[in-house]
Length: 286
Image (cartoon, rainbow, N blue to C red):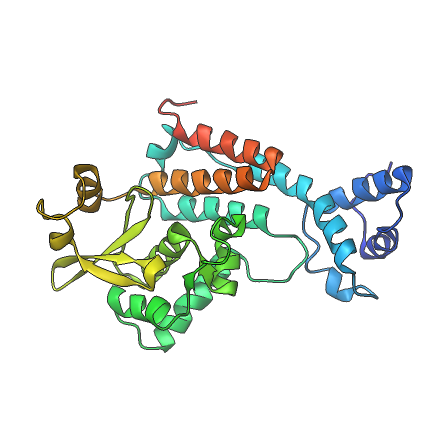
């Protein structure tokens, strides 16, 4: 057995064997492809030929086990689980980046999550964004990012690098991108773990405003929403008055992703995300 990962020349030879249905050949190809670490996106453009749709599907399935392994091995569970994340934005983003890399197909070229957020922050600055409300307008009212109404339960909504590139995500994906940009630019943007729908909070002239990123950044007065005379229940009003810490937000991302995999029948991936979620949910030190 080869001890080293395949070099570009061997990869090119392996790709020519993708459509060989012989079990022995398929096993050898899958085994060697697995050695590249789950991502061929920087190598494929240099290959001599383009892959067919079927070949891309087969190749993506061969790359996935390596990405599962990387996600499991590199995932860091803080002491005291999600509560141990505190306000550690660097660790929070590193977890989101691991999720993003895992969900990537390993074939298409794109910016890694942190680079994508950096570039979007630069784009916002060049556009004259000076505060959290300006950023809301830039992202959502101008439709730089929007709701994924076509595929609300697509697992890729949790791949925030994909979301930035495609311009769509689910409520928490859009909200977290908004928060990450705010962190880059020095704006105060808080997360709100509203039941069934993630929201954000900003302040204008000292007044708290609730931002619904999924509804094109629509803003609401927190005072109006939390007034006991409105139609919201006590739990909903309590959520609107509180903040979701980074650990709770990460747990919610994992819950959404687990649900998306279950809906797609991806049992192994759902089990992996459940494992990570359970490790974060613990309240005891390992």
